[in-house]
Length: 287
Image (cartoon, rainbow, N blue to C red; front, side, top):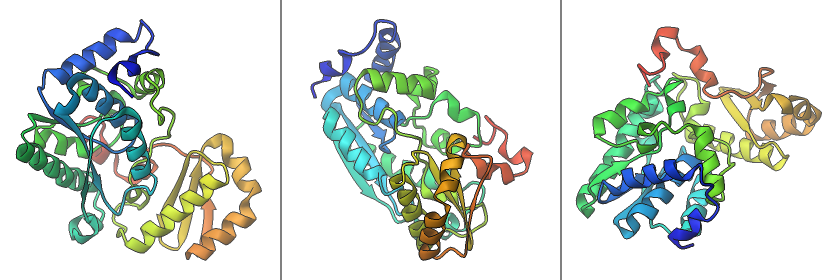
């Protein structure tokens, strides 16, 4: 897809905001975009490609804790838009501080992979590294924001006050294939803080969530609580989940769980953060 093709579906009311984003990225001269295959970083990478062409590269850090579909989406978006994509492999499970799963786990993770992207930028002569945080990311516990600040990485969507709703509207308008993809934080977020992150647990979560999506549930989380699998789906889908309880229970027992439960409150972002003391998860302070 050529760069101009991205703008053909962009409505006149959206163009000023799009132009501001493109100008912000163009002013950098050249950038490495922290890319995950999600809609936020996809829009950012597309805007950087439109602004800078070959003076940008999207870089994805591929780890054991990423959702199995993340790489597929990243490859699909890069191929659809045409921007260059670099894969960097990182074995986070070799880091005992990370696998101990402290409340600042996301900080430890983001600090490591942003360091890799800064090293890439320095080695390849890119002027800056940017990532896809939005205004919504200031409303929950986001320890990774500290790593962004420490690394000197830019957040153009946040700087220009983009919300996730706006990002999806832009992504839909310019034809990104993942515009309506649900948010997919890494699989480490399925473990309660203090519960060790293991390769077997990641396998159980990944296979369990893929199975639930095959049953037709688009928004799913499998929270790993030792021998218990706590399933979250959209509140509107709880009745449908219950109607499949026999086969779901059988599959999750096959995965190795002794007990399968459903959170009757339904999915909500950061539900495990609710277990932290209030002062430890102040939005905008620890975020």
